[in-house]
Length: 83
Image (tube, one colour):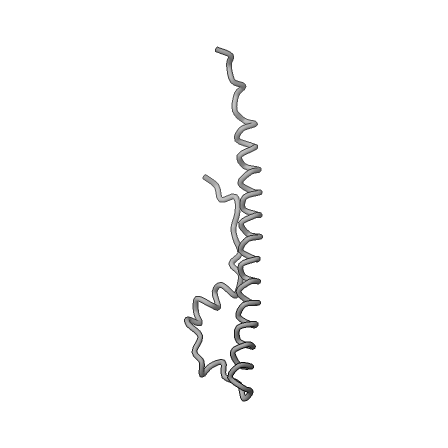
């Protein structure tokens, strides 16, 4: 079957795969511990949400392409015979 859709992986997904788990020493700033944690959580949450939204949009595009192909297949079928 021909390929009807080619997804584009969001860069954040690939980045998270390469990064591995977050290490506290990598995200520490000079502020208070609470400020460091809040900053890290906010940034990671935003970037993860952006990646999830991107993936959801890719799924939506894939389903649309799939529906179009299915409609073509159904249209090419001979009419059903009455029995």
